[in-house]
Length: 189
Length: 189
DNA sequence: CGATTCTTTGAAAACAGTCAATCTGTGTGG
DNA sequence: CCACACAGATTGACTGTTTTCAAAGAATCG
Image (cartoon, rainbow over all chains, first blue to last red; front, side):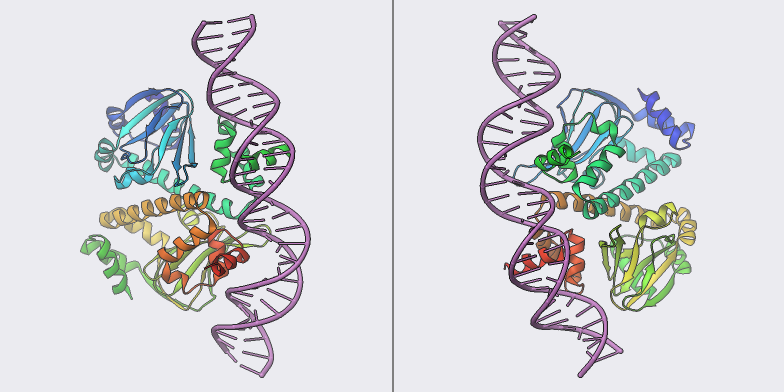
């Protein structure tokens, strides 16, 4: 499985042979079944996942027991709870497999020991963080400036491979509307 | 003015003498008047601002001509358009002074030349990026899980010094509601 | 003081949410 | 292979909230 990760990373950025070997040395693999919870609220997120195959989501449960989907992930995406992972505080989120999935995983402790001596990986991580931050800002802006209908249509265009694999009520949650509203939007085509 | 920045940075993190000197060597200062625009849509954001005194906002204008406030900044905050600053693409945002303000500014080119040779600064910037990302995630979650009223009350608690200096219609915009709705929330105390 | 900007308000209309019931499709076990 | 259970999606009636638009009151500033 690591070969897949390697290939995809090298499509994006030059990684030195040594750095890639270092990464390979600390990687682990895991297969999970649909529905399985990989991280629960209250646990510290000590792992970061690379999705070789499958689909995951990150979500939270509010005071009223409502679920809110913060993020989906599919093939070639990295998933963790960034907050807990970097602060080492207990997570407020859950991570769950939405399909049977093949994952590569890295322990935070191994990872942060490797990075300082692996400049090309460091650069990779930095860029990923920057891109995540830009994407968050974009999502905030879309939420405040676009109608639910436009957000839905953008979502389909941007993530067709998530759209056709994930229950609609989770997409509604991700978009910040009730499933009723999403249903209305969909029916008015 | 640089002394203020220095003192505040050292409260948060150890910065080596050389790194701090390097930062001092590239800093510039600027005074701006209330209302002044520091960055416009379409320009590349080549500067990052540290606010010594005053208040700024980052906002965008959508297809309908509506303004949406992405961020406020007051004393001791750093402000730029992160997306344009890191990608060097034209910005989608405006940065505006909401009060007469004293700023310290850094050119991206100077900054990125300094950073690789200034490890304590690099660490500072990394932490700042991580914190920004966490804050964005938190804002997304609050937007999807909390009522406008709760978001408003949280805002007052979290940023009292922004709340009492900034027009309400901008706070409404930041919170993602109309000024009418904010007015209603406020009147029902 | 006059001009500008900001805030509140009213009435109507558009929109989104709740709840409960129904419909659909999938998959599992007998 | 069928029946049943189950998760997901839609629907209807109702309720409640938010926006829109315009106007009027405050507050601020030169």
